[in-house]
Length: 106
Length: 242
Image 1: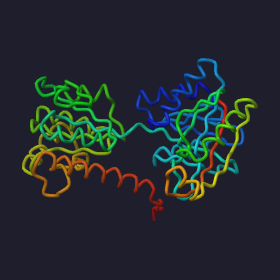
Image 2: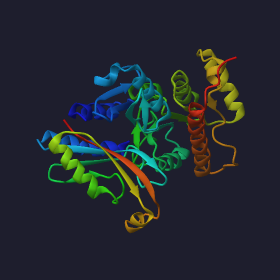
Image 3: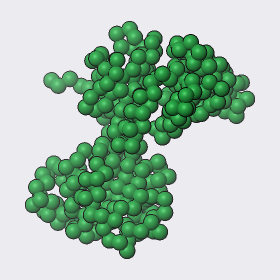
């Protein structure tokens, strides 16, 4: 819990300082996903990140969607298959699939 | 997510209140579901609130289907807490080991010479009588209480308060003979046999522990077991009464 709330602490600060902010949350996992359900990534409108949803495999794509969500205000549901190869590249000897929900902080 | 939702989650953390954030994935509508109330646009949906309370009991975040709508339930439960009554030798092993296991540890002892942060680096040390300390801290289902002082004047009030709460584990150091005498005293204080049976005493798993560190391991093994059994019981399919 402390992990997730540390992310929300930073997100709250960004929001209070007037920045556009989005939160991405791992909502479903299959197989051996790097991060458990409930893991969160906060993104501000400059692309700064706090937290993680995968340990590196998919953060780039999630940040793009987060920036789009900050602009249009619409929530997004993203599906990622983390292949064994990709996982290996970031130092995780495992595969898995994750579903990530991205929403703007209002 | 709303900025107010973040503030509410932060407040729940500082008060050690369990809360579930339910989010409808189609439109990001939310409800904050506590044990005793629910707030937000989704709070009027009884099925969502019921699903959130169940996720809270089990302590696991998940996505569920409620009447055709996908709802993500993010569970925020306070970290398990261990309250050690008696800043004694065994406590000096128990506190760091429990910290390593992610317990939020507090050592309580009214005796100033014992309850020093020097003897317990990195954990909270409260120099108060246990019942007073418990009143301020608030005992809950994610708390375990262990008494170690060997002194009825210090242990008994702590056990009384713990047995009248819904903490998930109560353990008391002392031999079988000590434990039998304890039963008589607590009975006089109004503790029922059923309540008394919740005490793990003599404390710890029977692994032949001798040294303070070994005893700490046996106590923590028992606490881990108690927590796992409780979770298993919650997850078990409910059998309808005949």
